[in-house]
Structure formats: C-alpha cells, structure tokens
Length: 558
Image (cartoon, rainbow, N blue to C red; front, side, top):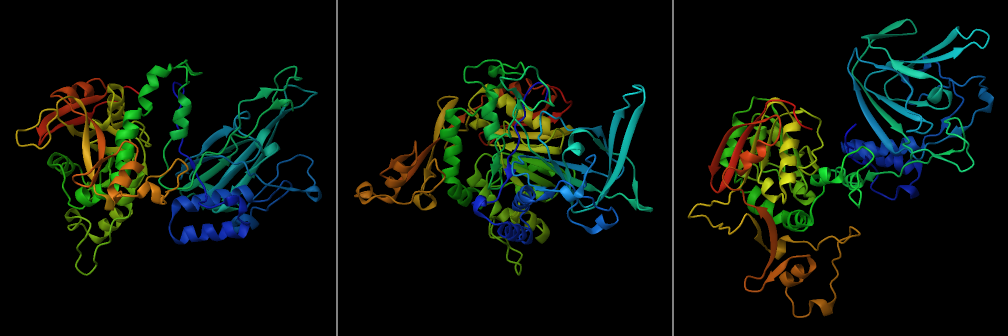
C-alpha cells in the first residue's frame, strides 16, 4: 500500500521438525492432510514439496505430452544444450501469492520486480489449464530501429508446476491473454476457473558492495539475501503479529512511507489489554464456553438484527469468542468469525456433535433447530485469530457485521475508532453493522454497578476448568515442586501460576480481573460519527448495554 504498510499472514508450515523429514515423509504427511481435508496443512505440505523439488535448468517439455503431467518445466535459455543440464532446488521460498482467474480474465505483460524477488518463480496451476505467453524484445545492433520480438506459448495444464528462472525470469515478459478459450495442438480448450499458487523468494533491499562503483542490477556486487521465513504451524494463524511490530520505530520517528508512528498507535495492543483481556480470556475460555455458550444466552438486539438480514448474507462476527451467535447467523446467513483468543476459538471449533437419531445438539439450545447441514457448518466454523483492530478481510467483502461485547475491552479512543473503521471497511456499501457494549448506566436490579468508566471487572474461575498457563517457550509446565505446593490447594497454586490472578480463599476460586470501558449514553454514537462513511441508523439501551445499528453509506476514510 502507498500510504501505510499492510501486515501479511504467515505461510503455512508443517507441524514437525521439517528439516529432519525425508521427502517420503513429507509426501506421506501431505497425503494425510489431504485425506483429513485439512487445507492449512495440505498447503504447508505443498509448499515444502515445492521447496524440495529438483528442477532441471535445461528441460524441454512437449505441450502435447504435458497435458497430464504433474510437473512442467520449460527452458527459455538461449544457446541451450540439454546435455549440460543440472538440477537445483529453491529452499528459501518465503512468499506465496494466490490468484483466481475466471474464464476470460488474464494478466498484462510484465517481469516480476527484479530487486524484490530472487531467481526462480514457481507457479502451480489448479483446476483449469491456461496458455501463458512469453515475449522478449531485442534490438538489432546494425539497425537500432529494428526490433526483434521472440514469442513463445506454453500451456500450463491443471496440477502442473511451471518454473521461471534465468532468461525466463529476467529477459522474457510473461502474460496471460484475456479470452474464453485457448488453442493447444489444434484443439480449442474452453477455459475454466484457474487458481494459481505463485511461490517466490522475497529479498532484502539491495546493498552495494564497498568495491562497487555504481548500482547496477547486472552487477554481481549488489548484495541481496532472502528475507527470513514468516510461518505458522497452527491454524488459525495469528494475523500480522510480527509484521505489526515492525510498523513502529522504537523512537517514534516517521517511517519511510512518511507516516508518523503516533498515527498508527491504534494498531498496537496496550499492556492493559494484553494482561487484562487477551490473557484472561485465554485462561477462562473453557469455563466461559461452559457457562455462556452452551446455555445459549444471546443479546436480543443482536438476534433481532440478524433476523432482518437478507437470506444468504455473509456476516462477519468480529470478536466472536466461542461462537455462540453462529447458530443464529446460520438460520438464514453464513458467517466468518474472528477473535484474539485462540483458546475461545478452539471451543467454537470443537463443538460437540449432534445426535443423528434425535437431531438434538448437546452444545447449546440455539443449535437444536438447525438442519444437519447447518450443524455441520457450525462444527467446522470459518474462524481465525485476529484483532478487531486489523480484520483480515478485503474491503466490502461482507454484507453485514456484528461486534458484540467487544468494544468495552478497548482501552483507548483511537482503538475504538479504529475498530469501527475496520467494521465499516469490511462491509459493502449499503450493508449494516450492529455494535453492542456495556453501559455505565445500569438498571437498579443489575448485579453490575460501576463507579467509573474504566474499571477492572472480576471473573471467578473454577480451578477444574483451568490449565497451567503457557510459558514463553509455548510449553505447558505441569510440574509444580512439592515445596511450592506444600499446604496449598489447587486454586491457590493456579492463581500463583497466572500473572495478575488472585486467590479467593473464602470461595476457593481463582479471580481474574478483566479491563472494561463503560460507555456513557451517546458515547458510541459520537465515536461512530467520527468515522467517515458510517451512518447511525438507530441507537438504544438494552439490559445494561448500549446498542447502535449502523449503515455503510460510502467508502470514506481508510
């Protein structure tokens, strides 16, 4: 992006010590992922296989013989001699671009940026084949005005791997002509939907060797090296955590794009939220799901909003937690859920199966009226670990969005406005948004009484639902020495294991403190009015919560 950097999700990688795996073990691992319909692990296996695939730099493949081949390499080197062929691999592939080409779509003639990517562009073609055109323009030395154009056509069949290296990478432009059919060996082939996976090796910025006299791409003294791999072994991945950390300079200087770090401060999670929101919900996820999600207690305003949406709508549930609204959405629509608590999402993704004989779901009354097909969707939800400050969806990709009991956990006004801006960005123009958050003004019969707008609200956790917290190395240390445990109950030991937790000796509970911002009447509306392109349709008060119904009336803003 021109004005600000955009965090990228990590590449999938094999959940094992891949360096010690043989090629056969990688193949077997990938086959298991395919049989289990595990898309993330399947893609991880494909990427690792591609890194290890030995590519001949001097190989010709006849397009007619190529129709059913899995691997396709074609050399465009001049003066080539196949007897001098050698093999090479691309172990440093660290960037993946996924493109979708509908019939009739193509891409203009280009050479991938030389300084951005190393030699070797590897493109995997899925579902539908396509003809890729290569062109090289040369000028005759005797007649500078005369240009010679070398043109080669290569058919990329489904399930093929095309490798562009050497001259094919640097001297030839490649393109896909926009048309509905391709002609291969006299046969007219109607185009189908094609999905391409393009793997590249992203490079560091070019740096001149001290002995170099000038910058030249052809000069071997220009030093570049592959960027480190940014990968995740688990799904859903944590979107952009490492990349976001690079956006801000420690001294608050203006970055290379001219944007001051203070303008981007909303992107960074304050310690208050990390300790008293994210860490707390990871710890209490099992009990939260057992006492909230399974009971099917939903806020009426949210369910009424969902009932007004057109059938088949795509709804983003931002801050979905354990997915207790998924069943309500699935009655008429489809959902994509996001939450910062991976542990809460696990409870959503491991929902108990329904009894096929009684058609009764044991994981909450809200699932009992769903069809078997809809319950299957709910048992395998489309969810990802992501912050409401940075939602991993493209602009206008959803018909509607809900954000329930999320904004009262945001500790600064900039982050609240940023959350609303993200909701507006992902919803199409004309689409609607429902936001609900705790109110400072509580009814006389409410158990919640707040003495300020920014407070810590206790959550009493039962030890039986808690696990020993993860250490910095990611391991769960279950071994507590006899000295540490002497004379202590499970609740007290658990409280000591969690940073910021307290032990309630009277109730024998572990007490966590959740940060909450209580909204005054009119405060949510005021924040919404600061986001260009958002229109407040309705605001209301419901059982101790402020509710706003919004409409996206224009792109506006960022």
